[in-house]
Length: 411
Image (cartoon, rainbow, N blue to C red):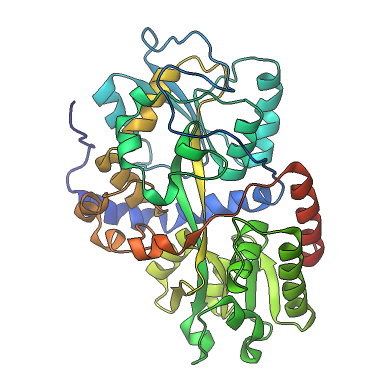
């Protein structure tokens, strides 16, 4: 197979230029767009299991595959969620995919909100029609819903040798898609505790308990409006498992958070807009997304983070092939391409989210050693072992939990 060769003169120099030009825009924009959407979704428990088997279809509906004659993939993604060259006109990894395979990518940044996008394509899927897309990127809870509804196709393992071999152990078997039969992660998202060293003024913050119970932080603590992250981090702090919790566990977490709200400990619940307050020191500490912290630290040495001993929450944005996709094989080849270490490293260097590709570190180090050494981009095994995912919710649970959380946050 032809080797991956992105168009650039010096990898390290080009990466440095891109960092300077975009000033953290990619990571921050991505989560800002997701903030409201995540709070509205639902997912059901699934029974799919095992490794995807070649040539079989379960749940999803295939169409005549035109991949052999039509060398194109129609790819829908979120804005600012892929590498771009210094001119802002070219996407090096997509160019490299075309050179390697002869397949062009019709790339569209038309996913601005999970629920909004679902509403756009659901009528076509329900009617058994082609959505006009071969590959889409959705957050895990909506990916779970799509699989449960039978709206996406089972993947052909024979087209995914790199993906199956190189997928990080951390992301191999979510409860909503065991064995990754229908999806592969585009990027991972870590939820941690961040703080401003100057604003803390010597106060120690190592846990959610420190955020909620330290008098010196009263009115200077931020929590996220994303229920799965705020509730999940608090569950871990209380010794509960976000993958196995009960209704009583959930209510106990909300009671604890309500107590902190009532005594004025929480300044506010925020989406991505916590970044400005944290950088300025208006927030001394908060629950935060790792991709944001990578970018904030590049501009402000006072911003730091900690992984609590109790663990941290992780989620994924995932590539899926919708029913009736016209170019399924081509889409699978694109998924597999991004599990080759070279393009995976190029993508991670640009957007600074968690790479789902194992053993990518030496390739990323050639582009950006700082990024390669950052556990928020490449978690080491010890950090991976502390990651936890929020379990799938039934539609009934989703509605009940979100209503309670909205009452807590004042949404």
